[in-house]
Amino acid sequence: MIKQAIIPLAGQGTRLLPLTSVFAKELLPINGRPGVEYILDECIEAGIKEIIFIISKKKQIIKKYFYSDTLYKNVIKKKKDPKVIEEYKKILKYKKMIKFVYQNKPKGTGDAVLKTKKYIKDKYFLMLLPDDLIMKYNCSKSMIAMHKKYKSSVMASMNVNKKTVSRWGIYNLSKKVSKNNFFIKEVVEKPSIKNAPSNKAVIGRYILPKTIFKKLLRQKPGKGGEIHITDAIQSLINENEKFIAHNFAGKYLDCGTMSGFIKSNIEIGKL
Ligand code: G1P
Picture (cartoon, rainbow, N blue to C red):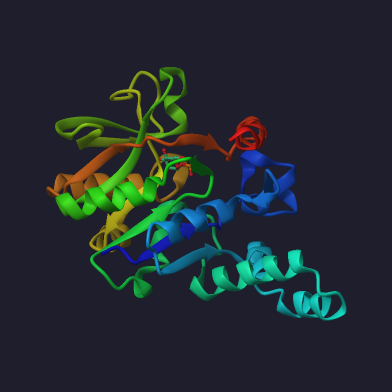
């Protein structure tokens, strides 16, 4: 069973400047709730028991969000507002599950994953990228079911407009596994339109094997000088680790760009 999830939260959020010059993008409200809470709820509902947040010193505000006990206790003592009590209970529930590790230099998602190495207990773990919200359908839950059935790694996937391939990890398929699930042959991080193997993109949900840490330890910086999880995944595929692309059923919201963030607020409001 997959019991642990990791969430990289140390990114600088340059696509959301100027907001991110002073604030963590993952706490920006989407329809009145910090984006990261949607991700936490997805994990809990999928049966995850422990969540590792990879933050940085610059993003301590994320930890503070879950450690404001004194503030809550004082407010509740003065005025027994049921709404505040309910919010505090929710924060306590999240806090119990979260462990914090640090990535102080923005060296990429692969490097962020490596920071969790000594905490991962089982053979496989889940990773969720907080820029990507998937609503109405629990993508992590269906990926965990796929993993259970085929004992392989899984990534969420979606067809994107060919013009936007350089925004994503792009893969091509080998065999069909079942309806909406395919084995991946090759995956490339943010290719140019010319070099893209398809228009099939990796979306921010991954079930990864613990063996990826060995690859990451030796992983050279790739696109943009960063250490990419995508490149480590390709090394594992080269050694016959099976990766399934799972075309999820939910509604995808890209909260990592300003236009996507604005659209996400409107879309979630409508759900
Ligand atoms: C990351 C991954 C990329 C993936 C994308 C999904 O990119 O590196 O392969 O397609 O998430 O959102 P980032 O959003 O960190 O630029």
